Image 1 (cartoon, rainbow, N blue to C red):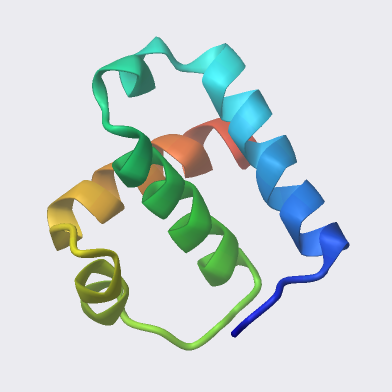
Image 2: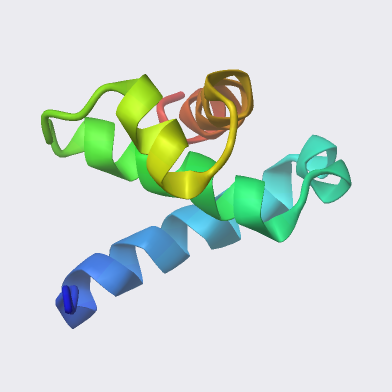
Length: 79
């Protein structure tokens, strides 16, 4: 089992809170796809080597879904 450190969990929760407050478009998405998009954004921001395809397969989502939501997250967090 992989158990992320509390600091990592806190960082990801902070991203979710900020994104949720600022983007109503996410309300139409499933919780699973929102979580996957935020997690993919976080992983990429930490320079972890994983392709969007592998990540999407692991999450059982399409690359398009992961890409769209991670772009929404990036637009909010990286401004």
